[in-house]
Length: 201
Image (cartoon, rainbow, N blue to C red; front, side):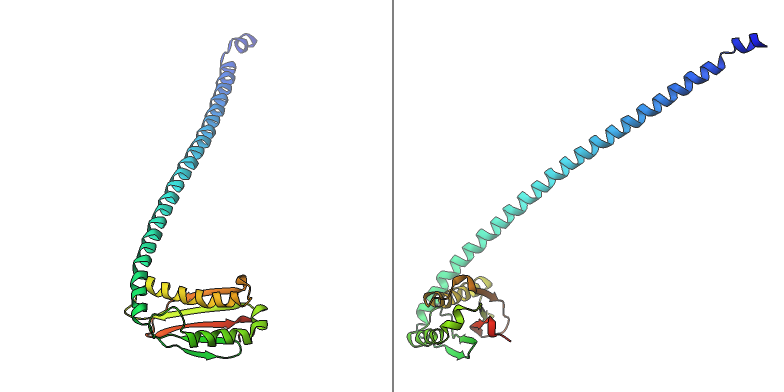
């Protein structure tokens, strides 16, 4: 029996086969890990390139839209200036309190007439100490069914800049003045409001 046990090749064959199988499985696992890592890297690179292309396209579209809007504003501005020249006498009404000044315009004028200009400057002078130490908010409203948005923004912006310039000339720090343009769907909602935020309820 000892002779048969020595001549039996199967135990050695099984050992070699199992070892070979373990090595093969190990190599397959390593290969799968390498493939997974490479595929993740490639997918990240492709994703980054796609994102960069999308961002570039979005920036180009934004630039195109901005240039188009600027062209529209310039085109409308000439029309507004012609309208303002025709409407030389556009009286405004002033509503003044301690912490608020409302300037209600008629028409599309962006500058105040002499009398109105003096009243606004006087209101600023009377409260100059408060204005210099407070935050100021300028709200502009201009709503009309016959005006485009770009024209409305152009007129509102120039009105606010006129009031802001008066404040700065009187010594109010420019960084304390905030400006906002509001869309308004109300007909004849045509005014600029100056709020002293410290006293705003």
